[in-house]
Image (cartoon, rainbow, N blue to C red; front, top):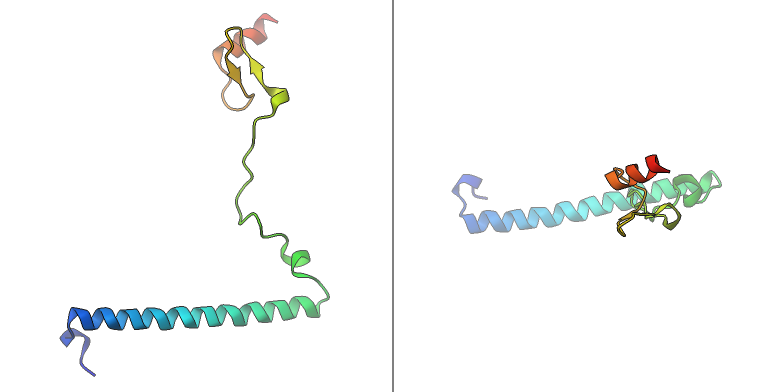
Length: 98
């Protein structure tokens, strides 16, 4: 085998592609082995994966807060404020005048 320094760019790119493919396959294989071990431990303890790990549907993302219609404030000129975020000046004026 030639030294890396003596290989052409095309040969090095081909080698990189082969290495990436082998690494991906080995990582996937290792993940499957770890997953199988974890599942076996969970089942041996008499639990289900959801009991131990919980629901994974959220992917760690926080739920976005949506505007609550009961909190909505409508100003004297038809302006709308959801009740979230900085209070607009007109809403502050309405509150002090009440």
